[in-house]
Amino acid sequence: VGLHPVLHHDLAITLLYFDDVKELISYPAVPVSDELLSRTERRVCERYEELSGVMPVAARMSHHGREQGWQSNVRCEEPLLQIGSEIHVPLLVGPDRQTIGLLWLCSGQQDAFSDDHLRLLQSVVQQASVSVERLRTLVAAERRRLEQVLEHIPSGVMLVDLETAEVLIQNDRVLHHLVDISSWRPGMRLEHLGGYELEEIVQRAVDAPVEITTGSGSDLRVLLVQAAAVRDGMATGRHYVLTLQDVTREREIEQQARAQERLVTVGQLAGGVAHDFNNLLTVILASVGFLREGLHAEDALVEDLDQIQSAADRAVSLTRQLLAFSRRQVLQPKVIDLNRLVLNVEKMLRRLIGDDIRLMTCLAPDLS
Image: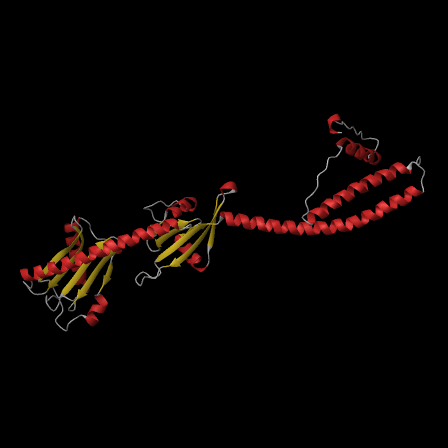
């Protein structure tokens, strides 16, 4: 459009096709039918393929100027019905003169462009090539810095195109996570994450983090997926940044904390029960003492009272342990005579079991 005052033309088309830039920009200076415009754009793409060996993919390109051009740039002249003459110059960059674009001008008049027009256009395109090369250098440097930042982020990060299911950018950490929840590999389409389709999990993860669990036992992994839309003015709702964070350790700590809380509750309950039970034992032991006062040493009931006394003493020891557990006290272990403990239990059991049951004990001399 800026060339029009010095280089008269009816239609200008600029093709840029390099790196992440894939655009076909059409600027009509006079009314042009959609059929003629589409046919001319195809010719531009074919010419670019002849120069570069690469055929631009139309589905990956953006078209501008068709609507706004007729309102702001179109002169009040006769519509362009056919191409009478054309002129084009490739956009070359780098020491190897790589073709990354094409500037195409056409007119409905025959022989509308001269050699001077061609040299003027070549000069303009050459200056544009220098600017594009500088811009590509800056973009490449920024991309390297971005990649370095991504590699130092403790979570997996990737940029996805929701329409094409392509992963545009990713760090190494996300590759490790995707092995567990997806069959995706570099160069493939990312269609699923865990048990979700890509679009489904993105829409859910935008509103709130989504947990994906894989494996079991020692191989159990819990990944937290979050998503945020990229607002770039042209692909709103298409590009999303996804972060995958391994929260397996955090979930284990949370489970341990909940188990600890339950343990505290059990301890409090055990302490209350032990306290009440200890009061009952106090009554039992006192009653045993009162009964002993009225009996002779050779009385047959003395042996029964001894068994009650022994059982009550063990119960008292048990209640002390429960109280110590509820108060988080450190227990004090002590050495006991296992043989004596077994013999005491044997005396009690022989009085409880019937004659049809034989009870035998086998003591180990080294446990006394």
